[in-house]
Length: 194
Image (cartoon, rainbow, N blue to C red):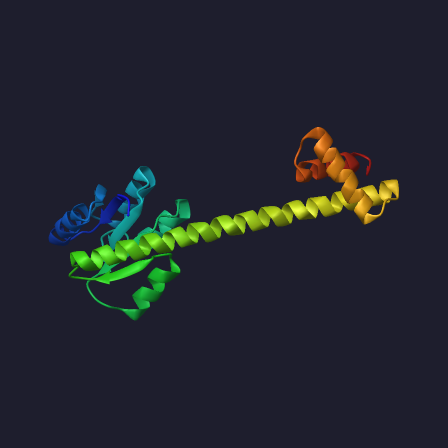
C-alpha cells in the first residue's frame, strides 16, 4: 500500500499521540491534527488528506457530524475511533459514509487492518462512481442520438437505419463524436421550431 496522507481528529492527548505514532510506524504521513470537530472539518477541506481518522466524542462537533460536513465538500475515506461499541453510533457513522469503526484502545494491528479495509472500500466506491458516471453519460448520449435520428426520420423521410447511417457519416466527415453531431442537429432543429 502506498503512503497515505492522514488527518487525525482526537481530543484526548494520549490517544492522539498513540494514533500519530502508530500511523507513522505504518509508513503513513500525518498531515494534520485536530482537537475538535470544527477544526477537523476545516483542516480536511484545506489539506485534502487521503484518510481521516476521528474520535466520535469531541468538542464543538462530534466526529460523525464532522465526517458528514467533510463529505458534503469532498469525499475522503474515514475511520471512526470510539471508546465503546455502540450499535446506534455504528449505524449513524455508516450512514454518513464512515468506512471503518475501531474501539479504543487502538492497537497498531487493528489500525493497519482498518486503514487497509477503508482504503480498499474507498477504491471500490470510486470505481463504482466512475462506472455510474460513464453509464449516465452513455445513456444521455444515447438519448441525444435517438432524438437526432427521429428528427432526420421526420425531416428527410428516412428509416431508422438510414437516419443512423446519415448521423454516422456526418460524424466521420466532421471528425466529431456521434453524440456531438446529434446535439448539433437537435440544436439546429430547435431553431426551426419557433
